[in-house]
Length: 335
Image 1 (tube, rainbow, N blue to C red):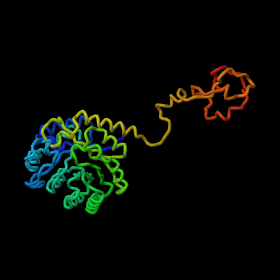
Image 2: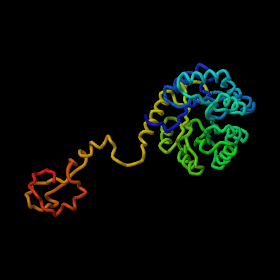
Image 3: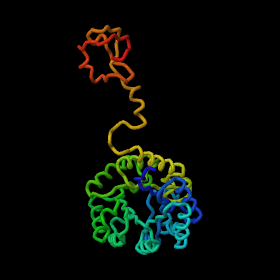
Image 4: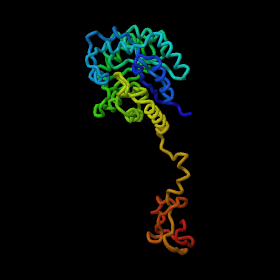
């Protein structure tokens, strides 16, 4: 079995619409796609947003409700503590790992009590000092999304997490763009490489584009973590459904990434086992261009280069021009 190099997180987020049964169907779809983690969101709406916070433009458009506050929207999307226990057990039954992003300090503590094995810092919390300090103090693997951030903000957040006790080898930074969906001209995928070079850290990509080509390209560039929103139906009501993959697209993305992991290989250029048998067929040799008598001199007129490649390599052409034939040759005989 080929070792999986890329950690793939299927972001269910709030696409369960507050329905535990829908959340389980999302887990089914993620497990069928072959991802490593299915990720939800853990929050107390009143601790996450003020009553005056408005929805983002994409949230207004995708929910079809521009008047509703962000608080009112999120209150319908909370998962209860009991739901967390239920979903964790359901994930175990489906052989997929449960993950959730905590958006407030109490939620982080709750997730830690649930023995979540890694923590995800969402883009909106990258400038939240107490939040970052709490995450770093857990000393568990941390994934940091960097949507809306510049390099200085990434550096500041990384410093907080490190000073709080998490080691650099336990941190992965995800390049990200926080627009749903992200326009292709705003992806700036090579910024991910800049992050790796600047901070000497593992990198990944949290994708909000439509389609699957950008996360696949990110893996080709060296992403070790891929995160992608998915839904059961893009037509469902809710803020994130329209910018999410459907189950078939999610599986296609995972399959493509797993194929790419194999295809990237070890970087050493040698003939592969599958192609060696074709070498004598596809390559060429020195052959007689016409009948040649013993004692004739090989010239550019009486020898040529043709398949198969079982004879003298054409790279030795110069060495054979001017030599004397040691025997008779018929046209097309190997020299």
